[in-house]
Length: 95
Image 1: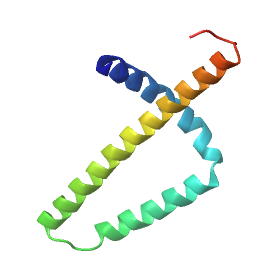
Image 2: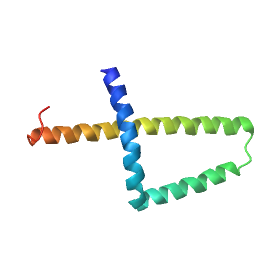
Image 3: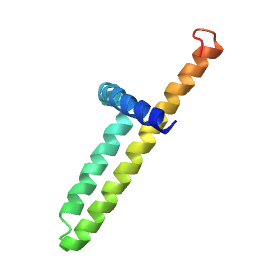
């Protein structure tokens, strides 16, 4: 089951990236969130933190990015699974 999940996550990740690139340009909330993130990143860069503090914060942000990417991939897989179940229940495909 673990190997299947890893394979599905890999395939879904590539498909998700393609889908997100094409659809996010129409999402105003995404644009706002990205603008906010860019402003905060610029503020972070200008804070004049000690190198060790900057490294710690950078590591924390990287870890949060990793968690978010896993959550997004799993949510995408869950959505695909839901679509398959709906199609199965509508008897449009057989699982």
